[in-house]
Length: 171
Image 1 (cartoon, rainbow, N blue to C red):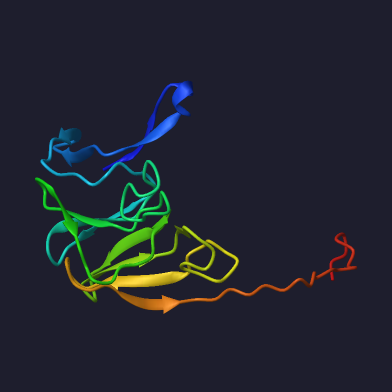
Image 2: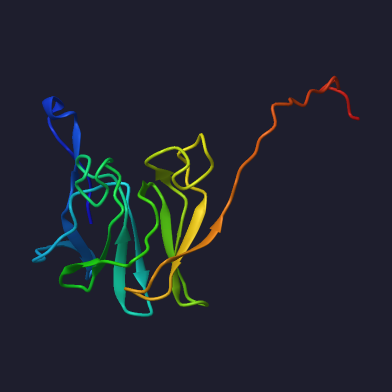
């Protein structure tokens, strides 16, 4: 689903797409669903084995407000693909809008796990002063309330380690 389409230079070179393709019998086949998420790129998809459906979350839309976040082009919406059509998911709690994140199915716990990415604003899903998302979310089954599994703070030191050892030395 989706991604960036190459466009002529006067259209800034690329724009997000909302086409759906499936891999069937060794070839890609374009689908024509009745409903589709808004165009986007930089989103994450994962197959939820517990319900046999693909879940999509986040990404970068065409413009601010195009996919769930009024003041940003980053998306905060979630969709589910049943093999024929897309349906929006409307959980009462959802992760903050983000792009360039990852999702995977945890078979041992029978839940989807979403981690990382880049958020819309400093501190929206990570430490103040950074747009990097350092949180992890889980979704136990399609339509269930997602919850924050962990959030990490990152610290760094301004100290610099130096060495006076001679690189040619065997010590």
